[in-house]
Length: 410
Image (cartoon, rainbow, N blue to C red; front, side, top):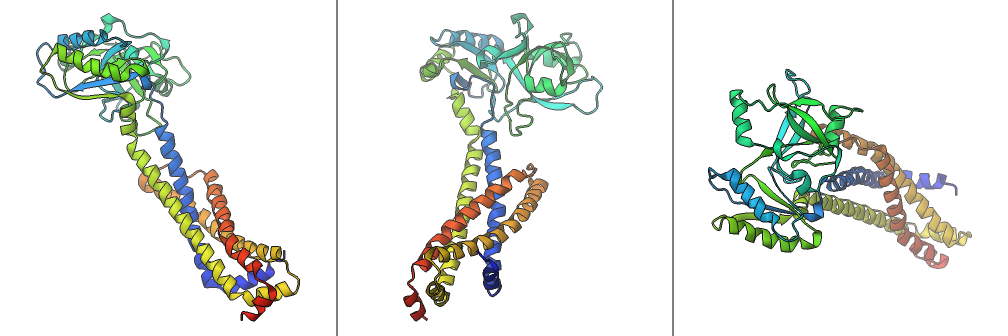
């Protein structure tokens, strides 16, 4: 098809053409970045935790004044929970993956290092490897004699009297690879302070941080063998079979009440619920972005339909003349589709440039990653498809007008 007449026609309607092309450009820029942001959110929501997600029950109690025998009380609580039918493993932890409230530490490879090498999530508690269902890929887990009560360590660090360093520690595979690339982490030392040194005795396949907001560092975690007492900051972790979780939840509350009838249980939930709550904002943001993209594409499609319908009405005489000279319905249909394709293409080219500029703006102000160029064709294909579908109705109406009726209509 000769497109010279189409360009000639478009030049006579410059304002309308430029307005529609601008609308398409803005839509293209927003769609490309919106799809990329949705993909980022979905990728984050799919982040692995490293734990047996569909098998965990978590129990937390209300704030109470820590009793003097809180360590013995914690042991009694866990002994009671282990008696529950279906409880495969029981532990106590200072935090859980995706729990939000987190304990973190700055890691140094040398005791006198001024700036930390990185920051990592620090899990502490008892029997966490078994209770979380972690997979040990190198080394071993903690022995029972390696656990130390937290009060002894904290007081010893203040006074310099604690002699238990270097203490044993387990690290995630991601943390080991970041600290010692292409090396075995077993036996390696790192420091949380000049006095507090740790020697790696085991590596777990994965363990997400409680505050896993950044996917790049979400798996940087360690486990230290600190034994905590029973208080509000600790979480009892029970691993069971997925089908037994609800029964174990009821039994866990009854077991803890049996140890201390006066205690108040504030949170009893499955790990699935913890994960869903942590990523609820990501789901909401993805939903909002989908709604915005759909609305923009709908408005753009309506704009194309409106312009095409207006031009069909304005050109009924020209259409009739072309039909009388032998143009087929297919020729008329192809004319309008080609015309629309050119307008949409102008907008898409400008939209791709605008999309990349918008991505740089988002990078500067919101610390988002750069828009991959592979996302630009997504917006282009979507707008080309919508443009052709939107113009199809008006073009078919134009092609269906009989020559005689068209020539008499003016």
